[in-house]
Amino acid sequence: MNLIIMGAPGAGKGTQAELISKRENIPAISTGQILREAMREGTDLGRIAARYVESGALVPDDIVIGIVKDHLTSDACRDGFILDGFPRSVAQAEALKKTGVRIDAVLVIDVPDERIIRRMSGRQVCRCGASFHTEYLPPKVEDVCDKCGSKLFIRDDDKPETVANRLKTYHEYTEPLIDFYRREGLLVKVEGQEKVEDTTELVRQALSKAGAE
Ligand code: ADP
Ligand code: ZN
Image (cartoon, rainbow, N blue to C red; front, side, top):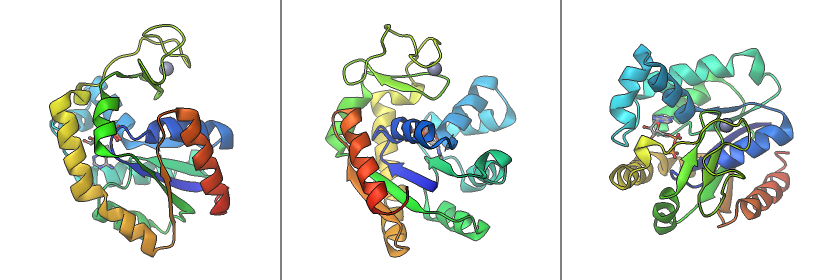
C-alpha cells in the first residue's frame, strides 16, 4: 500500500502513520521527523530547515521534494510506504505526481482548529517518532517513550504562537490539496477522534472500504 496521510498539525497523522506502519510492515516517512533529526545533528539541511520550522513556515519545496524522492526510490519502500507530512503544498503534490510513483489513497484526518490548539499543549514526542499526550495518550512511565525507552521532549514548535502559525500555513498551503486529491479520486476522509484507538478504527474501516488495504 502506498499511502499519504494528511491533516492539520497535531491531527494525529504521525500516530496513525506509526500504527499503520507496524500493522502493514511498511515504512512511515515523516518529513517533519527527518527535518528535526537534521536540526538536532546540525547538518547543512538542519540549519536551513530550522529557520522555517521554528516559525511554523514550510521548508522550501525543492528541499523537501529532494528528501522524499531519495526515500521513495530506496529499497525500503519497495513493498509500500506511508508519507506523513508530505506533500504539504500543491507544488509538492505535483512534483510527487511527476515521479510516477503510484499512490493508492490519501487519508485526511480532520480535526477542528479549537481541538488542535487544546491538544498541542501536553504533547510529548520521542526522537524515534512516537508521540504521546499527558492527558489523551500518556506514556506508561512518565516522560519515557513506551516504544524505545528514550526520554520524551516537547517540540520547540509546539509553543502556542508557533502552533497558530502552523495552522495558518496548513489552511493556506496544505488544505487546497484536499481538492487536488479528491479530483484524483484518492481522497479518504475521517474525523479525528479524542481517543487514538477510535481514530485508528475509523481509519482502518475507511481504508478497507476504499480498497487501499
Ligand atoms: P505537524 O504536522 O505537527 O506540523 P511535522 O512534524 O509534520 O508536524 O512538521 C513540522 C514542521 O516541519 C512543519 O511545521 C514545517 O516547518 C516542516 N515540514 C514538515 N514537512 C514539510 C513539508 N512537506 N514541506 C515543508 N515543510 C515541512
Ligand atoms: Zn521512542
